Amino acid sequence: MNLFGFEIRKSGSSEAEQQKTPSFVTEFQDDGALVVAAGGMYGTFVDLEGSAKTEAELINKYREMAMHSEVEMAVDDIVNEAIVSDEDVQTVDILLDNVKIQNNVKKILQDEFKQTIQLLNFNNQAYDLFKRWYIDGRMYYHAVIDITNPNLGIQELRYIDPRKIRKVKEVKKKRDANTNVNMSNTFKEYYMYSEKGFNSNIGTSNPSPTSGMKIAKDSIVHVTSGLMDVNNTLVLSYLHKAIKPLNQLRTLEDATVIYRVSRAPERRIFYIDVGNLPKMKAEQYLRDMMVRYKNRIVYDSATGEIRDDRKFMTMLEDYWLPRREGGRGTEISTLPGGQNLGEMADVEYFQKKLYESLNVPVSRLASDSTFNIGRSSEITRDEVKFSKFVRRLRLKFSSLFLKILEKQVVLKQIMTLDEWNDIVQDIQFNFANDNFYAEMKDIDLVKERMAVLAEMDPFAGKYFSHQWIRKNLLRQTDEDIEEIDSALEDESQNPQYLGTLFAPPEPQGGEDQQSQSTTI
Image (tube, rainbow, N blue to C red; front, top):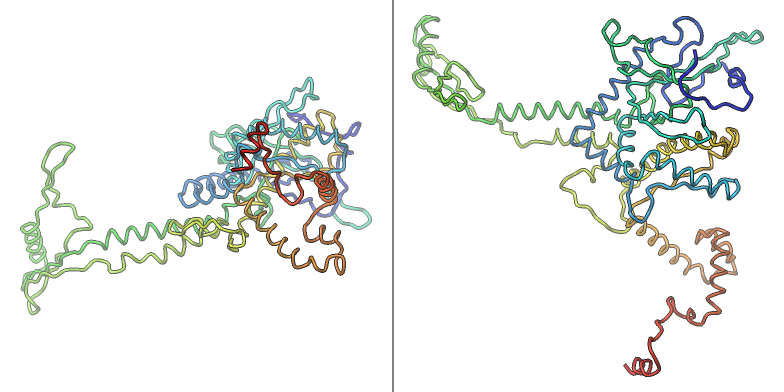
């Protein structure tokens, strides 16, 4: 059976030649692929229903969590920090400084990256794409190409619901004759797609586990969070560790509301003296007293009628208790309401645990905390950890661009698959940062370096070379040193730069206006 879509292979190689070197350990990847035994009538679909169903339920759980106010605020804060939209700066750009290829090829890669941004509509939907990937923990795209002319590259990227698709990896195991060890080798990788998803139970009207379409691996762009469960079978979201704190917080909040509503009112307790009456007559006498002294006539605004609700008891009802002969007589006392209704320490504790599980500094989510805009040296340790966490998210999300670029350069015959694998590790992506904080950080760094430079200046040329100071203290590269030396040489020959940082303004007009400006 042929797979739907296209496959990228080495020129002139068959499927058997594409197989990797066998090993006794099954290849591990963080893509959540379902590893099955290759061959056999049912080998391809072993446990596909159970695993895929659990994954779909997890995605539904993550999306429900994102609707909670605290979780939504934390996710928005992370997305806003990772994706910065500025009119003057592009949201993300490709860096090819460390890639050892020709300049014309770099120019082609930059153009292909711009086309990738257009296919994703990243400039307009960057927030939505990153938020969707962060919440679900995975993202699938179908790379649509022109089969008759694949050299045109990817024509469209269509988003696929992650609950409807699953990656399958067939593995062949063969016993080695010399070592008597089962050697494992990846035989085939593909995707299973079902329009109704894989979260249905067997025997229902929904499709069975074996119903679905096989799609070639290279036709799908697949990006995950990189987090796996303990069995390395399911991809987890970054929200996964917040499930328990969120459930605890919800339960405690509901219990707190119930306690406050039930214990807030102050109730009366009626002790009715029933003397020596038998049990049945004592209860009847008590009911008569309740009806006599309590009136529950209410007005129904829906029908305009007056209704008697004395037969219903509410949480605001008084207590009527019989009292036998020999004790005190009839008495009316009060039952005070709850005394610790304003105590919220337990709720705040679990709320703080939820914030910590979401990897967001608590100071950002606390409504009563002030936001201090100061020097970068005043940033707390939590903010530094949060900045590194966002940097890791950007690095993992960047694999989306790499996988799309790989298909583009191979389909358009810009590079071969081997050439791309040689340079892919050196390709980097630069995400736009908040201009204010980036400038404040750069200014603080320059100030600190200038302060150290002033202290080291008497020892320059004696214990430290000028070249060492420029490279290690000022962090100037060889290109920076060459450019700065050339600029200094040009400025030394121009009198207007001598002794001043900026050139003085030249007088406008003739000699009379110049003389008048000098007099003024």
